[in-house]
Image 1: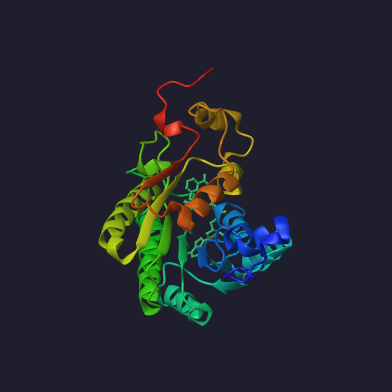
Image 2 (image 1 turned 45 degrees about the vertical axis):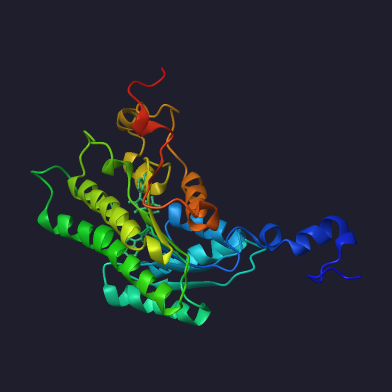
Amino acid sequence: TNGMNGTNSTNGTNGHYESNGFASRGRLAGKNAIITGAAGSGIGLETTILFLREGASVMMCDISEPALAKAVIKAKDLSPHMTGKIATAKCDVAKEADVQAVVEQLDAWGGVDVMFNNAGIMHGDDADAIDTPEKIWDLTQAINVKGVWYGSKHAILSLRRHHKTVGSIINTASVVALVGSATPQLAYTASKGAVMAMTRELAIVHAREGYRFNALCPAPLNTPLLQDWLGDDAEKRHRREIHFPTGRFGEAIELAQAVLFLASDESSFVNGTDFVVDGGMTRAYVTPE
Ligand code: NAD
């Protein structure tokens, strides 16, 4: 006779995978995700690709339309077996109306399950207490802090609208929210401290609704954002590399793997953390020679 669940137990390996949705459909199967700052060549794009490979539907958001057009092609090329949907939207996270519109677009997909508030800037004119221009301070807080607030707010509203009891919001902070840096970018540092504190409070307030909030804390990465700025200035590079026990910067994909875990139900009891992905940098006193 057929099994109660209609699967044929004599199918061997194929039967096993067909009856095991988790193994065959991916770690984010059926989840709808929004990723902001998805069009850079860093964390957002790598996360988009991993999410697609793991069965999620992904809405890629960015302030730059040309960058989005390129990024979506790359994401599709590198996820040939994707089973979810993919879409793009121009969105300035510092504008609440933009964020709200993007989140509401996902009502047609069944609402948001995962919100990755990843967009952020580190402005070239950001400096120390004396030299940071006020307009750079305000711009940095508008994107890095208000953007995360708006993304969190509208994700919560979407989760509630669709009567969801599970949701994961991941907000990108930085190791500079944990350790001080002698190479100052004061507006950026202040903004990432705000992201971390805000994320922790959101995690506590919404815990009984089933909505988890975690802050991602990357160390300096081998992405254009930092590497273009360092260029071939060996001394400037060494000034940073020396603080890594591993002797190297992180890679965007190593952050994307952490985001995948935080987004999936595998991390169901992980809430309110400062999720540090830094090769041990913030735990080091002196580093190996
Ligand atoms: P990236 O520059 O590759 O990506 C950032 C993306 O955000 C870009 O595509 C940019 O167009 C977009 N963006 C900028 N302003 C926006 C706005 N107002 N609205 C929507 N999108 C906007 O950078 P990345 O290195 O992948 O950084 C992603 C996140 O990680 C940022 O929050 C950054 O602060 C953080 N971070 C990066 C590093 C690092 O070394 N790269 C270290 C710690 C934290």
